[in-house]
Amino acid sequence: MGDEELAQLKTVYDELWSDARTMVKDMNRSIRSVYLSGFFMLLMACMQALSAHQVYMKIIEGSTRWLDQFYLYAISLGVIVMAIGGIYTLRTYNELKNRYARLAELEKTLEA
Image (cartoon, rainbow, N blue to C red; front, side):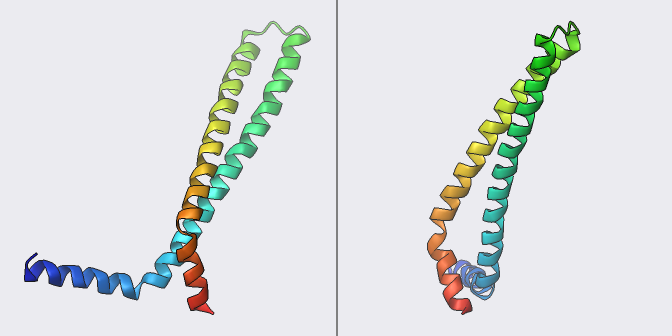
């Protein structure tokens, strides 16, 4: 590594050092946003499941409209996609939270 590369690396580290507290706060906010996204995706999956149930009951009662059948299949697919997406997002949140827990705790002790 040449002197020029070391100087550039020192500049990067100095910038990281000066913005460390802000970066940790931003990271914590982003991790919470991941949690909220996963939570709302699962909530939407539940709402779609209720809509699918209503359309299904309409079909059982004798609706012959092809659009009702299409809605049932489309909403059911939406339930599956949203549920899988919500679970995946919540798993990602859990991984991020565990991975950066020590850093978040360090930031709290520095702030106090």
